[in-house]
Length: 484
Image 1: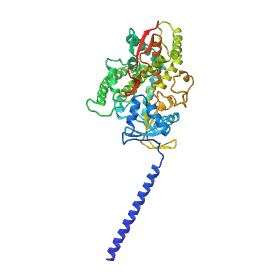
Image 2: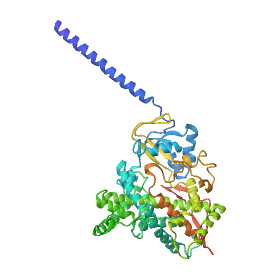
Image 3: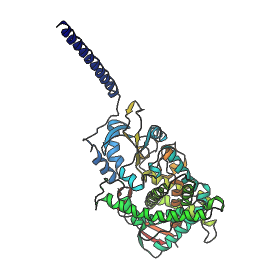
Image 4: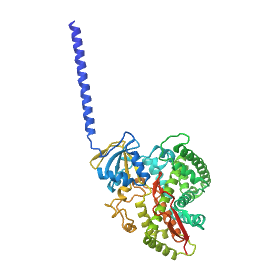
């Protein structure tokens, strides 16, 4: 009996000891979590579960008033860094040049690019926007090779020819036209024919536009949904590009005895296929990056061109200065002689006008990143897994960087601005690889239009919408007449 009582007593003591140890473990874990939870999160309202402030965000974005209706009121209430919830994700929105520098320069270390699933599926999981680290650097290096100084110099005559042919085809004999639609057709053609060496077939632009309609749509792959239609269009494009890429590979492999393996200097498709032949990238990577580059190089550029002409139409004094610059260039050219890269370097005021237009009407509103570790910034903790959104408006519309920021003043670009202030093409390791090509497209198109046509807007107050990228609501109709 005494042995039994002793056995029960020892079991009771053991159970008590185990309970005490377990309680201590729970207490320590709770204390650790409490300390972690006491980390200061950015201020802000996250709204309803999952939905958060998504509806307000996209409503403001669609009306092209993301800064005025969504960002600015929260800056006033919470400061330059604040939290919200968008599309189910805890999100911190940051504003200012220092914030841009911190997050964009820490790509791959503290943050990584974070795009919606629909965008990744439609652009392609092997495109550069979905790549991280060394894979991203490899692809970017290939693209940069095609767009170096020699590549740009070789592409200028091609762009000039495309612009002149476009004006002869779509502008000659017309009284009115949609400037935005015209520039979309032109920039799309330039990407395919001048940069990739692929002939544009009828209906191809429409197919690409069907893909674009689904890049921010819910990934509901149900017949008739926007995403389903976009996926079908993507499959049509991929089928076409597979044939083009394989034909290009066969052509280049049959010319291996040529210096450089038959690569055409500055021809991006040739550079991508050459890398595929070397085994540096796969066929999927070639196709996905061609799809992405077509979107990146033509949609944003066509919008920037349209906004440049919008500003020129509204500010006649700026137009006069710009026109004189192009008249001086023509004066030193023989009749019919096309532009050179050196001519384009002389278009300094024109580029100031274009940059000021992109400051007021940025072709991208910003982009999302995802924290890959807890981030300490400005006294706040951004937990691992949270999204971070930087916006162009955070500096473009800020009087701290641009005096009287809502006024149109191209001369402000006579002076250089600090890094991470003017970001129409992004910044950091993911800065747009094709921004120099966009610059050529804008300047060459402006040159040939202003020296051949008089233009005026039919609706100077036409609103800008976002669906999903910014565009003039009515296509920017203009009245044109040949110059005397």
